[in-house]
Image (cartoon, rainbow, N blue to C red; front, top):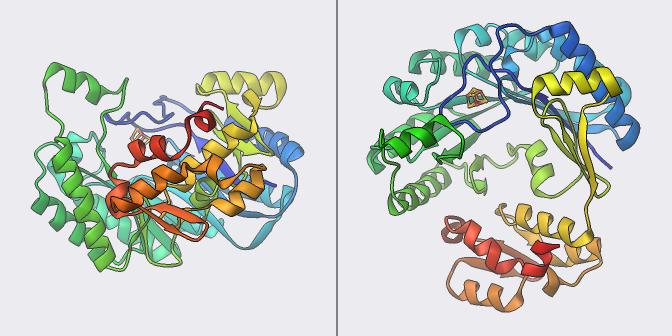
Length: 383
Ligand code: SF4
């Protein structure tokens, strides 16, 4: 039963050159039409997923901090009327730290948002320009302060392993980030994604990404510094003080059901994968035609569900309880995780095992993709 709701707001003021998210720049957005559409998509999802009071809502994007607070309020009101809210519900909104958006923070907090995740990305002007961000460093830090005043919980993102960045540069930036007193940080390595402007630039030789060894050193440093600061990684890229973890994102990584509405949103409910129309105009057209934005609704075979659950769970420091997962999917622990490989990589210091639990340790996380294909048997991945 889904107890988490994801709402996608697909608009941004500009497209960042590294971004491969479902984000679009439009001169005008008809907010009334979007409100009607998102409300209808939500009702459709509730009619199918039904159920229990929500424990988390996440407004992702795009840039949801550009949404008028009245629109956020209306969507929250509808979600509460449909599902009800569990006590202490976590309501997160992703945002950019521009002064225009910071002016909305008080109103967003007032309508019920209690956690924000800010895309600071870097703390110096030259890097922010390189990343194509519209805010500068002082504007970003000011917005962070405003957010910390208004919201109970504030997280922010930084991108590291940038071309030309040294280990010392990153250590200094990380120290400054931690000095902000934040309880949660998302720290991502810069990756060059297909179809992005950065991909074209790398192809043309405009810049050279950092090599693998330098990236691995930065990853190790990140873990060391955040542990020392009391915000250890609880997921490969996410760090939190104990109790400050994103409950919404844990829903994905623990492979629990969630509803997703709005353009391009994915959902998982009762073994069915849902995908919404990706392009905003196509999603709106679908809303007008059939009052929901679903483009694909696909029952997942048990091995596919189990494989997804393993690939998600092994991103987490807590790892996976193979006994519980085997019972959930009617499989054996050995079908979920190759015991000989797990033993081998445990011997290499990359994997840990504790009773029925298995997980990837700090040294292994840097090699996570390779380890996943080793540990999760091929026939499970192939479904
Ligand atoms: S603001 Fe975020 S979602 Fe929008 S283009 Fe930049 S990285 Fe992508």
